[in-house]
Image 1 (tube, rainbow, N blue to C red):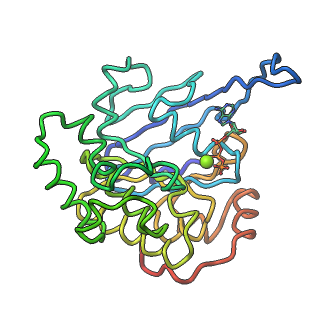
Image 2: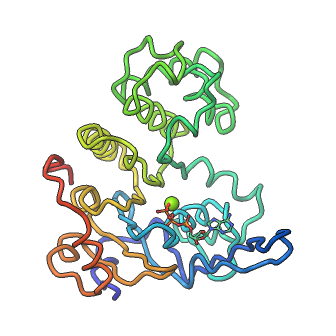
Length: 278
Ligand SMILES: Nc1ncnc2c1ncn2[C@@H]1O[C@H](COP(=O)(O)OP(=O)(O)OP(=O)(O)O)[C@@H](O)[C@H]1O
Ligand SMILES: [Mg+2]
């Protein structure tokens, strides 16, 4: 089901059109058999600037694969991806580089996505070294200090290491790192799923505040429908590589049209703690 209201409020920042992603997986006793895994089977959607689009579905339904395809980290077998009207899925690596600065990701497991031997200052500055080569060391330090303040971490966090923080604080470091290259679009791939409920609420509120201040657009991947309901204006529901339903979250939750959405809603307990985050 495609909701026609999605396009009424402006041109899409991101458009995914008929996307097909097929992995080649080695199977069999000596991994000699190559099997095709049809992870995404012709998916289309649009994300407007400044909005938060939810992407939900069971494990293995293809959510992360869509995020990776947007960043060209998954084998695109068909379809196109447009960023602000520019077809980006067929660009070569050099031509795609500016988009790597504009599109950042925050992953589920902050510890796994950080080098434990680097200080927080180095971790947060990583994208700056790639995307803002003109910055001096002291400019970078100043930017890192600003970012740490923005995500609610004390200034003395700079010279500490990831293991010296709680899970929620580590996710704040990842948010700061994602923000450091001044992105326009952030893919949050299960970025609050590993956190306990009260910390989830804090991180979601932080993402919301950042969006209000900087106008960032989010693709928010989650299997927890309660978080999506409170944080996202619209959502896409994925099953086995296909979008089975999409539309404004309010309508989706009030009257799900597809039995799979209904099943997902029935399976998840409601979480009353995140109130007014949207
Ligand atoms: N690199 C890969 N090689 C082969 N198959 C893969 C690869 N990555 C993902 N897949 C397969 O593609 C399908 C979709 O995977 P994907 O990680 O996109 O699902 P997901 O919806 O993000 O799941 P989860 O909620 O568990 O994170 C799955 O069947 C998965 O096994
Ligand atoms: Mg995933």
